[in-house]
Image 1: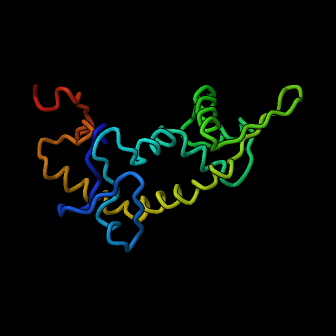
Image 2: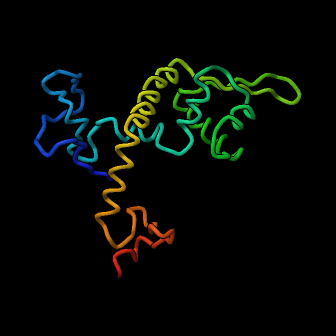
Length: 179
């Protein structure tokens, strides 16, 4: 979503808007299943920016997932995260999560120093949301794959939305339209 987005909806029908401080739950009149959240202006406090700031990078969710069972040492955490995260990137990620109050870092005065990481209570409160997102992804994987295949078939130039060609070639996004 871009800065200044106007909303995330699942239908073309106008839905009630949720503003700053509004509360709506499932089944409530203003919390219909169609509208997720709406920000009228980029300055609105609708929570999307906060969520993306906390978990929108490539590694933060992995760190939360890997720390959810309990405490891990740095190298243990690094080995557990899929995708070969570098030492520097893991350091930056856990530091950011620590700053936000989601991860606790404990240094033991030994030689060499022993450092352990664990989720704080605030960090643990995220785990059910991350699991719900993962469950949603798994449940909808076939529908998403079918939608992608239908979109690719409808766009007969052979290019995917990400710039990759069905034949394996890649097109620079700036030149994808033939410009």
